[in-house]
Structure formats: structure tokens, C-alpha cells
Image (cartoon, rainbow, N blue to C red; front, side, top):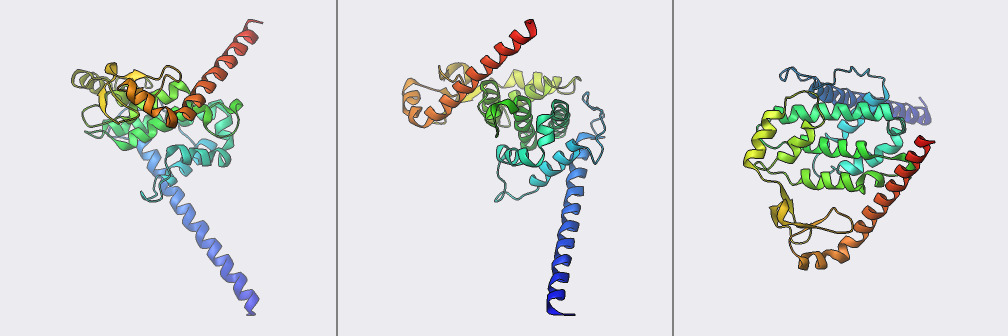
Length: 266
């Protein structure tokens, strides 16, 4: 066999092996999320009994997401960066409200089961909650990227609260999922957490954790919390850009809501 033919043959073999490896990883990822969604030990579907076919756009979206989740800590990019990458590869899911709702409901089921089957705060459930928040607040009319989700005032406040999760203060995470499921699977856990754990917050500047009622919130963006006026003033140079982004996104969404209300009344 001529050298050029051998080179082409080796190239094809490498490509075939890579495709085979990718398919094996995809099947593993599919089995992972399907297993958590349909967890038999729980005995409840939490209002989501929809079966998603393997060739469905949402199934492919979930497969790729959980492929990323298998990365080791050194390569793990973070939920927002992974989803931002997937804006291009799964555009159909992002732009179709029904597809996005189906994906969101699946993440809700998975996160709920992760909480139910772990006796302490579950990082997986926290990651699912961040993903759900981004999907719920995504707005394609605000341009490319995830700015509509990441700088949405409501979404940012939710992320702020659920990220402050310790073994004794997971009440916000339980509340997050309890509000999104139609069953009562998380009711007891949430009520117990409310009895023993106050609503906690964290100063954006110094990092001190206090009860949320003792912290003040930035009067402009209504997201970042501070333990004192001194911390608020000191944090302003680093907070200014994010603060402006939160404020502009909020104003833009108000305009969209007004335009939608006008069209509806007409």
C-alpha cells in the first residue's frame, strides 16, 4: 500500500475510533440523566412523566450537558459557560419554548431526586438549580449569550440565595425545588429546614455570612448584599459594571412587558 494510502487509512481509523468513543460517552451520559430522572427508589415522577426519545432535540441537549458534567475538576468550566457553549450547538432548544420547558422540567426532576436521595446538601442539585434558573429566564430577543438570564434581577437573586448552601442552611434550595414540583415530596424536608435554619445571606465585599434580614441590598441593582455601608462603598468599583448590567436588563424587560401588554390590549 502506498504511503499516501496508508496515511489516509490511519486517518479514517482514528476518526472511526473517536466517533465510537464519543458515542460510548454519549450513551453513558444519556443513561446517567435518564436514571436520575426516573429514579425508582423515589417512586414519584414529581409531575414529569414525559418520555423523551433518544433522537429528540431535548435528549441530545441533555446528553451533551451531562457529558460536560463528567469532566474532572480541573477542566470543569462552570454551568454558565457550559450552557453558553451550548447556545450554538442546540439552538433549537433555546429558541423553542416547549423544548426549553421540557428540558427545564427534566432538570427539576433530576435535582429533586438528588435532594431526596442525599442526607446532606447535594452539589448536583445546586448545579441543576442554576441550570433551571438560566433556562427559565432566557430571552432570545435580548441578543446572543446568556446576559438575559445572568443579569436578570430575579434570576440573580435566586442564584445568590441558593449558592449560599451549607449542611445546616439548605432551606432556599429545598424551597426552589418545592415550588416547581406538583407533588409533596419535598414538603417535610423544607418545613424541617425552615425550623432549624434562618434565611442566610453573604456580604459581597467581606464575605461575612449573616441572617438575610440584617444585610442591606444595593439600592440600584437589588441583588448584591452588604453587611455595612462601608462594605457597600468599598465594593462599588468592582460592583459597578455588574450593577449597571442588572439595572439595564431590568429596565429593558420592563419595556418588553409594557409592549406585550399593549399588543394584548389591542
